[in-house]
Length: 357
Image (cartoon, rainbow, N blue to C red; front, side, top):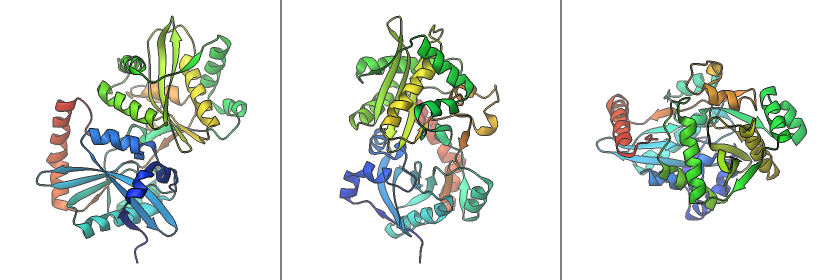
């Protein structure tokens, strides 16, 4: 008898999707949320809502589906399957594969991306069960996560001295952090700061404005997101959009203008966001992306500056296992890997000026 079984979620379960995902064994992830699925649907993905059950575990996981002529369908289980135990992953994915086979869904591969911490043991176990390591997709497959379970003052003392001193100086010098309403003016200001921050120090190119606007609108409408700004000379100088999803906070988007006069403004903004979300029940805060732990001190890494800032709050970088593929059709998967994916990503970039995934 299989350890897990997979099924499609009912209409009633989909209507309360975020409640179910937040109750998952590992607490879910904002990228599994209904607002995020709606954003990805606008990018051409078809969301599918699945439930994986077995051995006292019920895990709600979305799949992003795309079809390709001559190949069939690719399933991308973004940040899933969700489980508290990495050893469950092969059996959970096999349960999803069983659903594909039973319903004859023409899926040639299932791409997974669970929030399971990487280790030699995880890699060996998963590959022994037929999972194929692929390149990582999401920026927070390596990230800085701050445990915020302590009270405010003890929590402040756990920060790296760089971050702690910057926060204290900003408070002494009267830096003010404001929550701002999510309207067109806020969106435009935030996007401008994102684009400014990307210039020179980072290799990443921001997605188009319409993508960010859609994301912000949907998360604001669901009551899951908020903007925080710092102003200098009456104009926004540092901004952040943060998300609260269950007991997890996430620094989703951030930006700033160069040559600012207020020391520690970006640190105080993050500290304010952390304490706001902490008061509402989060137990961890994800800074959403750093270089991998082995590269965090490498000054040549394109995300070195970003990592330096984020690790001034928490000294530890968490490397998740990242993406693995379960191959259902070896011939089609080989075509996808050798030709299909590369061409698809190139064409998608030329048309939309943003990443395929």
